[in-house]
Length: 115
Image (cartoon, rainbow, N blue to C red; front, side, top):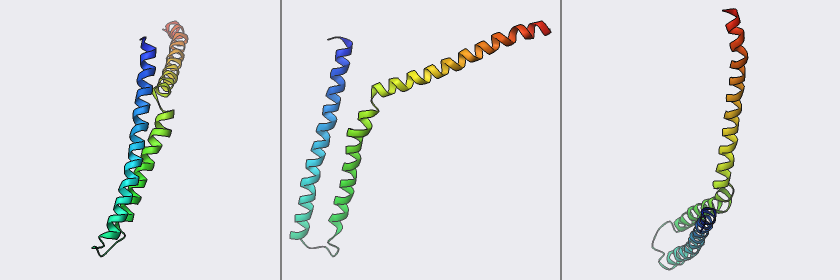
C-alpha cells in the first residue's frame, strides 16, 4: 500500500473504532439504566428511591459528551484541519519574516549613509 492509502485506511479504521465504542456505550447505557430502574423498583430497600434517576442522568450526560466528541469534534478537527491550521500559521509567520527582512533591507542602506 502507498503511504497515502495507508493513512486513509488508518483514519477510516480509527473512525470506525470510535463509532463502535459509541454504539457499545449506548447499549450499555440502555441496559444499565433498565437494570437500575428495575432493581430499584424490585428491591425497594432504600429510603431515597430516586437515586437511580441521578445516576442515569449523569450517565446520559456523559454519553452526550461522547457523542459530541465522536460526531462533531473529531469529525471537523481531524488531521486535515490540523494541517490547514499549521499551514495558515506558518504562512503568517513567513509573511511577518518577509516584512521584517524587507524593512531591514530598506533601513540598512539609510543607516550606512548616516554613519
